[in-house]
Length: 277
Image 1 (spheres, one colour):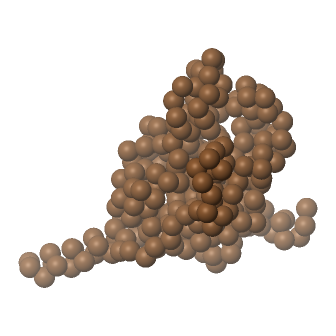
Image 2 (spheres, rainbow, N blue to C red):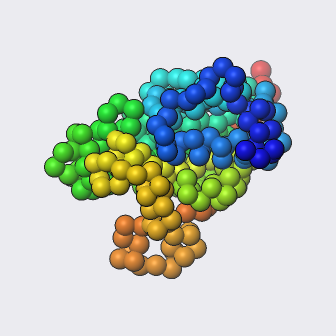
Image 3 (spheres, rainbow, N blue to C red):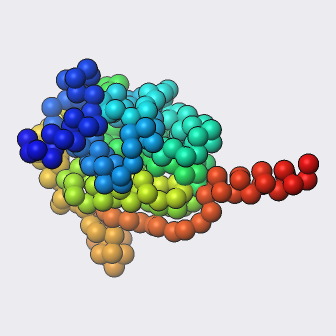
């Protein structure tokens, strides 16, 4: 371990109390954890200025290991808790970390409306295309034709495109990265945290235990390298046809726009109401 890595570990992790972690060996969520603390360190934010909220699932354990203000909440409700925190304490930087099922199945309605409101929250969605913790059931992002415990003859539903859904719903910053492209992921998370408005970073990650072993990729290294083979930079993807993009996904910043966030608009309404009293 390098000296800089040791410093980050000692600064941001509850390593003396909470480790060893619960994730399977080779799980990509550990890579996301490392990327997140590097991104936060680059922002210059103090630990007491950050709230990290999660729902339920493998990704929901991440706040347990970091030394911020943390909330481990109920399934699909990370954004509702985060919304309450941000409205009560707008000076705090509020981040949520969710899985694909947590964010877009039971939490799907909260997700699209948080994007629509453009509340100043950063939503990190770890997309491993399956419900990992509860036994390998298919999720809203499980690919068509893939195998799962609840799709033993092949999945017949088509997957959500989380990042595109976020753009359409109105999020003012949307990006996609992978656990293979770590340096890029560091930068994307840093940009998302600094952005004023609702920021979404979808992270393609591996679940080689529940998804991989049912879909002929039981090795974590093989799954992670697969992201290299299937990822296309956003600028290049825009020049490719639908046929050329079949089976691939774009990585990088999909949208980054400036528009009033919810707190700014709410403050204006509050001030107008106060003048009429």
